[in-house]
Image 1 (spheres, rainbow, N blue to C red):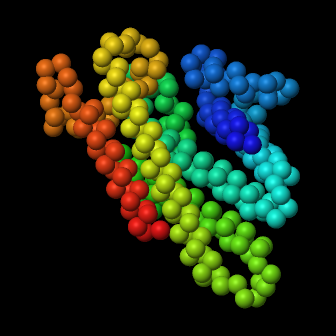
Image 2 (cartoon, rainbow, N blue to C red; image 1 turned 30 degrees about the vertical axis):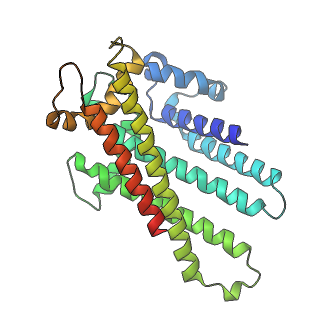
Image 3 (cartoon, helix red, strand yellow; image 1 turned 180 degrees about the horizontal axis):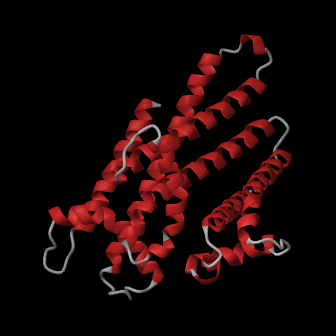
Length: 278
């Protein structure tokens, strides 16, 4: 089941990328061509242009999620079907929320790197959410990214809470005695904890990417290699401020070490904070 979940989530990402890609990018852009390879078989029977077939992509994403939920429901024991299926649905919502948060963060990189063609898809995915957030918080600069991520996290928490409440109500025999307020509070706490833990996990991934950037400086990699450009683009926004404060010592750039220590400390503090609060 774990392998199926991974494959379904990857396909959802490919479908979302296809949705925001242009027809030209699907044939010439490095990322677009990969997306086209993995998704073209789904659209080969459609005789319509991409602008019209894109309307089927949300249905395909919903279909993949429903298929996975049904598979989990059938494969679970009778007393755990609702709980397991609900947890899988919450997992999909959390996955999509984290993907949107990553897209919003990576949208900042598009104008700051020569490898922008790798990140333009994230920019197109994250921009509508930034526009949505600006309706409530009128910030026209890139600082809108932080409140946008908070808005996405709040939406995940609310959706997850509703699902947890429904699961809890299904397993109670006497609906008239349900304390809806307590169910709501419990759902909010559990969803917030899981959301924060997912954010911590993202920071851990960033730490490993910074470590990879540090290791690359010892092997003099080809700067035009796609993976090198991606790693540099992902890490430069956070390394640059540290580099201004911590100058290199000879040929050694200590800013990467400082960032790793900072991110490690941030993960520890956040993890302990989540333990203390929840």
